[in-house]
Length: 220
Ligand code: GLU
Image (cartoon, rainbow, N blue to C red):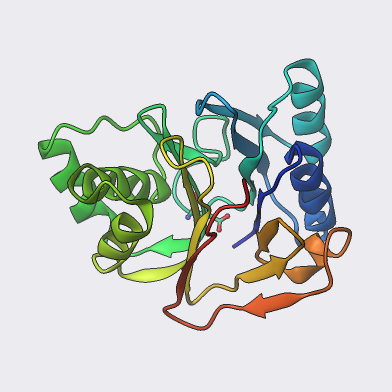
């Protein structure tokens, strides 16, 4: 299990996310990635095998500008370390997710989602969760409700952070068996798997309990 950082703010978040990932590097990881939603509500993503510095270079060449974003350092459990298996994982081009942990029933969910027409681009257990949330999103049209319905189907350990381009103010997070903390700012909120990642931006924290799900209410 490796690192998660997320932010919803009035300012551009890519610098906050990158610094957060750098602060989580002590844990060891095989790849790093970031997804950001911009003013036009389009989800942009960058993923690199290797160090956060490689991700930083990619982002410098092609900035991920926006006010809502999630980022990840991965320690592979399902699927080799590769760009395709790196997080964030997406369902379509509007929903993005980062995940720490292991989904034990991923194979049966994968088979079910394939039957329902979802196409898989990675070998990870995480991509199953992305498509499952998207499937419930089509039904509920609300990200918080979709995440709640999806995690009721999961067995295993997870900390998740989820964004959807149709809800550019909402960062939805939940945890079961993996740590996740909310950092409270002024007009902005942050999340991370370890509060160390957020120390440059806040010193006010709320720790999610097992089974908790939370959403930002919007800052803009
Ligand atoms: N099981 C997921 C994967 O292999 C997440 C691993 C992690 O916690 O970094 O992609």
